Image (cartoon, rainbow, N blue to C red; front, side, top):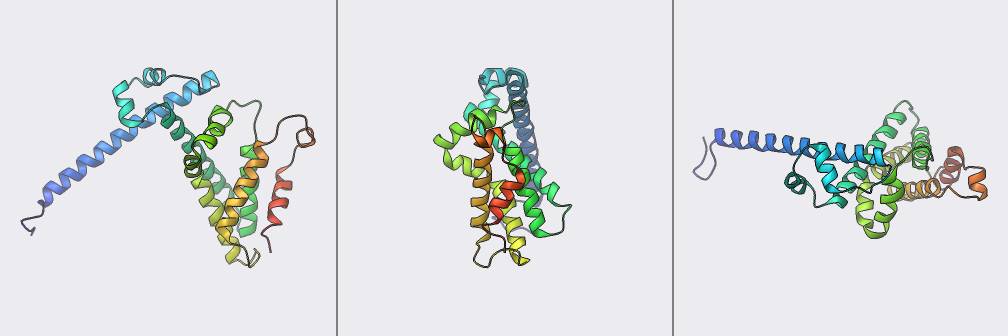
Length: 216
């Protein structure tokens, strides 16, 4: 029995179904815009496109676009966040075949390094063009975008700590953040005519360097 101030149960159920349906449709519209933008980026090899091009490719309306995104920047940010989230999922899946916590952390660090290195054969303007600008103009958004990767490394670092494989004075989450930034910086700094480019730094070297800072 409901009180006078409560909505009838049937009405609550109807509203919940309506909200669920609306969220599902909104999610589908967002995904169509993301898929359209990704297809254009792959074709052009650049993030230099217009909102109208995305709207036309998605076969949706301009009004619908601005109901989902504030503009092109937010669309690119969504693509960037999605790419990093998928990268975290792929790295996590690769670590699950290993039982030793430190070995799982090693796999994650080495894969993060390899996936963050510039690939001359692959056009990834989200990372080569958009991300560097974003780091300068919107550092908070960059931090949020990297949250899935940081969460994964922190989880693996904590597991290694609990297994007694890290130094006693190591703060797992802080060390995870420093490791992530170090690995990605080394990876993204490759390019040019210096020795590190002529004789590329290997993933095993990166792990050896980082692990000396936390392994017990």
